[in-house]
Length: 564
Ligand code: FSO
Ligand code: SF4
Image (cartoon, rainbow, N blue to C red; front, side, top):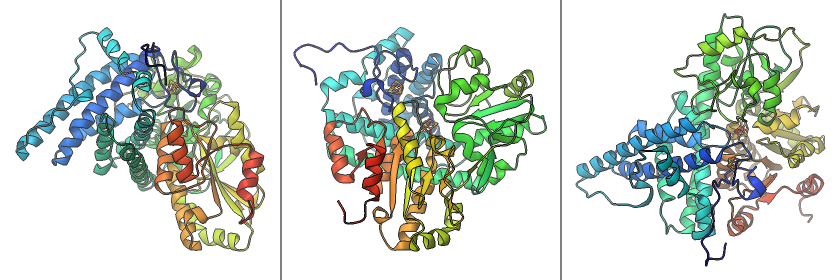
């Protein structure tokens, strides 16, 4: 806290929502992610608008009135403010204008609900106040007044910390809910909680315990969201099955699809069918190859490249257009900006944006570019160990544990990133003993994949469960194993070594805490928005630990029961 006698001088921007925040405490001039101060200010306004909409939409829902257009506008706006999603300031201004209209609709809906219920509408302050911005500069000036940095001087640090933990968890679950929504899967309880939670963050005197309970509830709702997305993926594309994916180039014209959105990938595959263009996945779309209805497309020829942070070098070298369906987008270099396409919530100033699910411009661009000149000898990586595949061999796994062939399970996964400290996760995977099994998911898997771990009685030692949202699969497998052994999940020989980066990882972490899962090791750095008191609480209640050294952590995890 600052000295309270002189007013603080605030920086042009302030953002500390992700792991790579500057100095661990906040980006104040430009984001480490490349987000400009202008975009950061506009995103503050968007979150403010969503909170205002939440105040009305939550109250309207309590009186039985909801509007899916309002709900979806909120999901989209929140998704846009995630790390590495949208850097286009003009698009932010348009969305803010749309949100103003949405806020009016939410207000009208609430007033109608009150009239029908014979009640007087409540008056409330803060985000619900209507803001019209005749000039862009007014919008920026208003946005500057919303700085979180200012709140650090005026608000109780623990309340602010929990308010932001809740906000980032909601952002993360909104992203997953958006994926499910695009596939036609929605659940009213998700929207209801998003509005309720955003409205809660506007209440100045809300009790710490109420905020903490809301964070855990966000974890519970995120479990519902991940289950819904799992259902959307598996009912639409079939259950993932173990699959060897080619990672070498194939001769011919090429399109690269990155991000997480299976629906968009599917639509690209449909529209490129018969064109002779090969489609490659990148980053978090690697797991697409394991879904029967996606791998059935013969021109889905392989996966290209690694985790998101390597994309500038990889995209420069790719001989065709690239489509970013979701995060993580790094600011592109000029050498490929004109062939980097975005869609839905994604955006970057100067990059072409696709609309109406029309991939014609992407296909035309692929025809204009050289493609790969030759087919390289196939190299493969094994993926596809979702819950169905793993539980299909559950008997074998349980026998291997009972006979002592498998001594321990590690879930090493989550997000990847550029920091040197993330080598912890690579080294940890490599140093796991031969009688242990590694489950992995998220883009963090790329750190583990280029290594031969062998197998235990035919069970591969490295089992890739899919995308970060497939944490749901890992949870289902852990629960099934706990039931089979007649113990609680915390009593299984299972350790979670989680690498986090952005707000979806925050949502998944809240889900694990909601489930009462203890002893998680989290790294490479702890969130900058967690206050010392909130951290102590998480450590005390959940035994949450920062990652230490591989040797010490491994020894502590594998020490015989009873030793200390
Ligand atoms: Fe990674 Fe990016 Fe999937 Fe994140 S590509 S870092 S947690 O968006 O969502 O794992
Ligand atoms: Fe910084 Fe992360 Fe915010 Fe980007 S999203 S400005 S890197 S804290």
